Image (cartoon, rainbow, N blue to C red; front, side, top):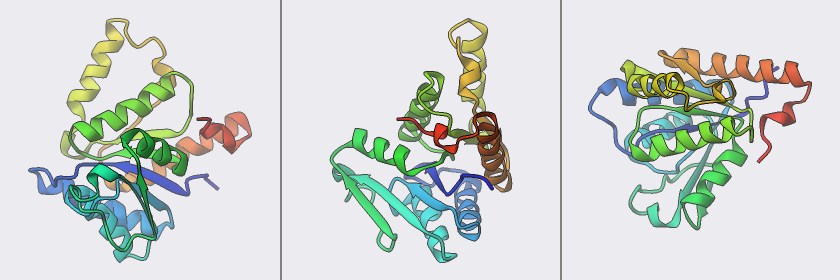
Length: 199
């Protein structure tokens, strides 16, 4: 039995230029609902965020939206989620998202998505947590970032690359199995699911 009960998904508040991105968000929403895995996300109702959350709800799943006060109107806070948390600022939003989730998935998105993903990678490298971090490389979206990480490693700037331990999948169907496998690996190595999150 894996410890993946809630997954935090980072993704764009825009739909992006490739229809495959929003389609991936909707497909992931259905998969989470079908597997009774709660979605933790940014709380908006537009773009990929909206497509993802509405798909979870449409298939009977549970959604926790976490949105800072300054984005309630800009990102059109989603109505209908079982839980909406309005935070004072972005820093509190990210902390609560971390606390609520057992793993992290980055779908395609913009600067905000990238920033949230990189923060989780940074915390993992520093040893603050061992929760799985997965890049959903839909239509090769994350290829430039993966090349940059390889470049940083080759030039000696990523000294604890083994701690990053990020996952990369190309297909939405592989996301949840990969997260569960990673969680089982950590639990079997430590004998304690609590080690997944320490912050």
